[in-house]
Length: 223
Image (cartoon, rainbow, N blue to C red; front, side, top):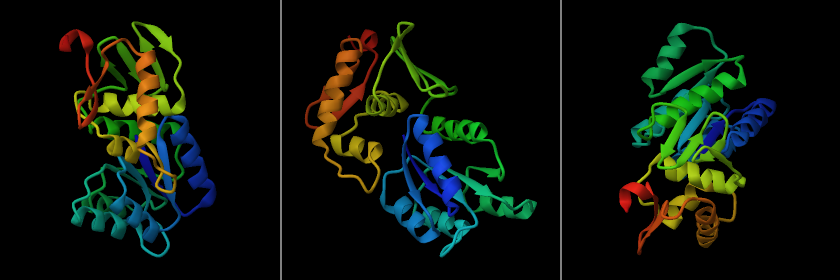
């Protein structure tokens, strides 16, 4: 999944980046509300961690503008403010959850996993598609109960495919979710990662829909 972190404190921003990336996600960051609003408005992010106390444009304004523009990605707001009415204001502006500072990084990751599960038909941190089991909490994959070694890009690709199994992803859509906004995106490299992932998964798990893209299926069901 691709996560946007909007936080003005450079130390906390880096800590959030590192922890979320270590959990297997692609992470974009912004240090102020203007940049954060822009990235959330034009990039294909799956969820946002948004601080309310931002320079240039406050977090509530950022969130309201996203919602007014029809951007519906899950948003977890961070606030150092203890006043209950400010938490309510965040939820009224369209936030999906909030976390007060200081917080434990493990709790933030758990809340983020819960928000991401709402994007698909998953009710737990363990996802299954046929013989494939993916544990989002521990960032590990099992095939018929045996551990599978994946590179970070392969894990991100598989997570995205499993998040919405049977959904056909185009190469462009996959590259938008897998690469940060400031990277050199080349949708042709997606073919390479798909080919590598196919070799590690049971035959028939990733299918090509001619002219459209790729999707993850249960080979036993699709056979």
